[in-house]
Length: 179
Image (tube, rainbow, N blue to C red; front, side, top):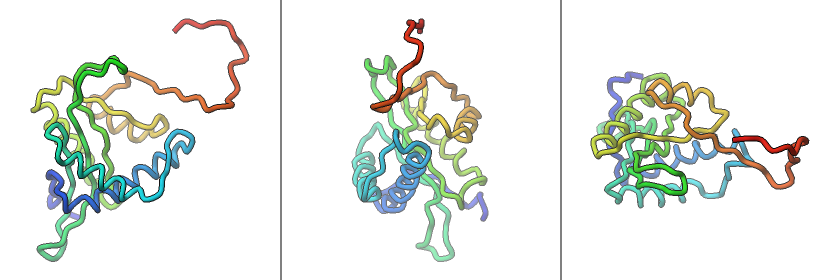
């Protein structure tokens, strides 16, 4: 596959079925990593297609696709996508306004070709051009490959989400600890 032929461009409504299939793969990946934390629902593709359609209409949101041209002029394959959005200050997260890379996924055929790198670079560029003073993202805690990938762009860990399932055993030592 020739990576120079791969084009990164804003998604259109016509791209949404393919993007929704990739987004569903991302959901399934997260669910496989931690089924107690990440839910899996029926008709993921339909739900994502509807949701991403609403994001296309938001001026503070961008969905990019990595497209490989096919043999025929009207033929192409979406190899990956990234979705970013400008976010306002969030008092609950104690986070000032920022850009957020909400999702990125590259199908196996597009990996190791620089597709993910180009998607992240262009999302960052788009968000920063619109005034984002920083770009944040979240990543599954046990997805070490993703962490290394994001760190290569200068991302660093700032928060750690912790989850407790109902019925989990509590600590054996009840002495208070400082945080």
